[in-house]
Image 1 (cartoon, rainbow, N blue to C red):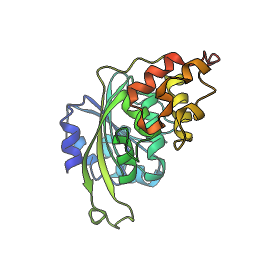
Image 2: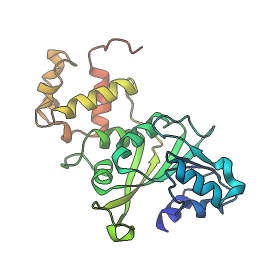
Image 3: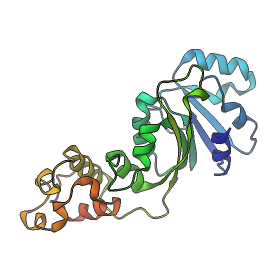
Image 4: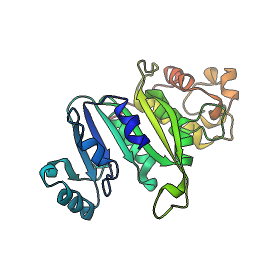
Length: 237
């Protein structure tokens, strides 16, 4: 169980599993007495199955949709999961909302999503998700998982990635400014930034040669630095 090993290498004190399903990796974490463990599962049948299997651990399995869920722990915790592919990007954005508490993540994603998260500037897969996640986390692809590893085998390939919170977050005016800037820049990724971002900057600033680039050519730090040059945005309420 490479996922389990990757989690235990992080030595978490508190661990949230998202979508334990039938408990394929859950059983390994329940043996680790040093870890405070909880699992959020959206399917009531799976919760019933797990609480039946582990009757003395009932309070650990919580019927909860991760996208609406409260933060599971006080203080720092780690997240693990075989993330449902249709909402895996939203789960990442949820983790970003909790970034002050989530120290690391080991997750299985559809390979395309995993590639996007870990992509570096200049690559075709580098986009909004890459920049927003990498501003706060170091993203590494750990290994690919062949479809044959599942029963029944899905039509998509999977990959496991690890996120570790960065020791230093790039300076930015605010997370909101950064998110808006990055999302707007990539909405028109074929265009020069000068065209896609003209509402954000004065004519003078737009003369900078940087704005002749396209969004995928900018590093995370470039985007963060640009927030300081943006027109003063209306206050976020």
